[in-house]
Figure 1: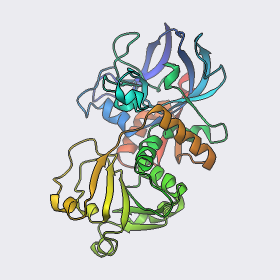
Figure 2: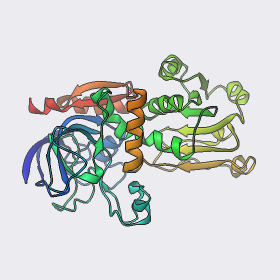
Figure 3: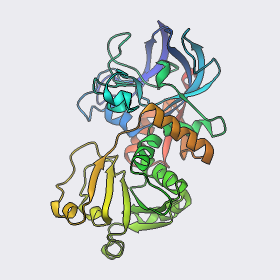
Figure 4: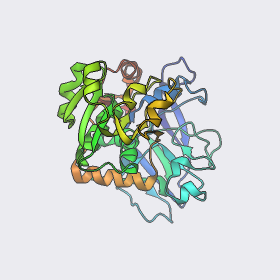
Length: 349
């Protein structure tokens, strides 16, 4: 095993502090990665604060990892030393259940292994994430990063990117569709970029008029202020698809009125109870509400390749790891456009 530097939280109300963790020796199907950049996801904060009541301490967050390969196992065929690679939200799964066979490892029926706070099959205990110097990952869960895109800004693609890409592809969003992206944050800004690149008419749906200029600069064709009843009425029954990125429970009924017959709204932000849904809003129009969670490895690689072709990355603000606790506070206040990324070289300071 190798001891490496990391940052960890030791309890739900504690700051992240320097910590030493152990990484396993490189097995025959493993890839060892020196971490260059790691995105800061709101999920990191939820896990540190035990908001989902499943945290295991110490928590070393980070599942938007970009780095370079430093060692490969004897049976590794897809990667070589020096390759630019990424690791997202998953580091393992059973590879045998129906979901895994369908390249949907995130829904592994025997339990996918999360990049942090998952069950560590090799060392016991739980997994540690990308707020660290290195990580060792099974080859099947390592991703190739296009060399032509801004490397640091590619980090959030591995969670925020795939979380918004997967439903757009699953529901076949295409040129000519009218797509509403609800909420402009880390997820919403990626949803706008992807829907625009796919050729859709993109409408940013927000409660904040001041976000209109930013939304249009990201690729939105127009902005709908959801608090304005006249605007909502004017655009009723006109959307093919709604991508709902609001990260907390809320009333989705007003948004259902925006959908055409047979339209779909997909929730990707609220992993918690939502307000009661009026059955009539679904029945009168054969409308659907669905949910979606990240994507499998194959789909994530397809998303990265698409980003390489269309030069799509996240809008990021760089920080040193020593400023992570301030960054957490700012994420909670929505005071970032639109994702923080940690320069992991700062861990050596």
